[in-house]
Each structure stands twice: as C-alpha cells, then as structure tokens.
Picture 1 (cartoon, helix red, strand yellow):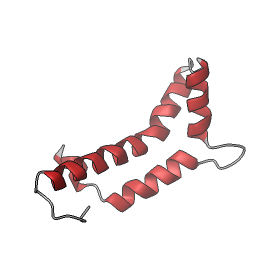
Picture 2: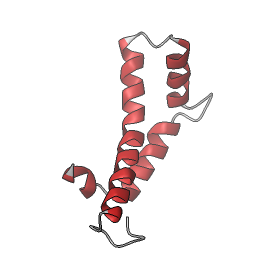
Picture 3: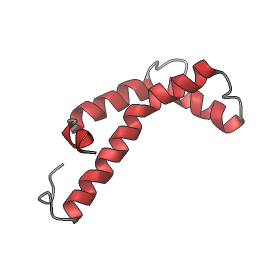
Amino acid sequence: MKWIDEIPMGFLVLASAFFGLMPFTPEPHAWEKIKMLMAGDLVKPLDIFDLVMHGTPVLLLGIKIWRERQRQRDGDLPPGQF
C-alpha cells in the first residue's frame, strides 16, 4: 500500500471532485450510476464500468485518508500532517 502513500492528497481531492461530479448537468454521472445501482438497473457492462471509473478516485481518497489516520495513530506521522 506504499503506492497510495505516495499519491499527493491534492491530486486525489481534485480527481475525486472532477470524476465524481462530471458532467454537472443534468446530474452528476456518478450519482446517476449510484441511483441505478440502488434501483437494480445497473446491469449493462458499460454502466458498471462507468461506476467503477467515476468511483475509483473517491475510493482511493478514502483509503488514503484512512491510511494517514492509521499512520498518525501508530506514530509514523506527526499530528496534523497528511
């Protein structure tokens, strides 16, 4: 998981915002795919790929934040540093 530690936090925040919210109209693509997943309509391979593509930066950001908190708790990082 060292490769996740090497990804800059700012890059993941920007990628999450960009991929998670694009296109802005009529509604964010990721939101549309999540609604399809909850309704049971996410069956086409292209739609599944879309959800994975738009959700990956958000997932990586969540993992990075979790890893940074663990590293702070274990004493590998000074408090307040991400």
